[in-house]
Image (tube, rainbow, N blue to C red; front, top):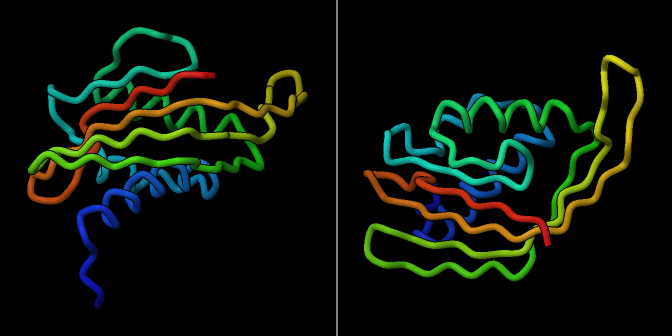
Length: 135
């Protein structure tokens, strides 16, 4: 078994988040986020207020369930390490078919955005804050 560097582990955690949108397997989402009152997130979709852990989990699942053929591309990731804290800044394109199950309609979407993640090592890396914004 290969031991991952901190940077490799951090990239893998962020990939796990977005891969959940492709696979619709949400079991790992709670494992990669810090389940603590210190967790917070801002999103590029409503509601735009600061969210806690539980609300973020629910909204991430809802977002990914609502988008079929979901795919993403991460561009220009920058990982900055500060001991047991890491900041990841990147550009991201998310695309797919936004499905309205009540009206049986769909709309192709392509969202170009920016993302910032703050991760803490306790004892493994966990996402402590997410900020997604559209460009």
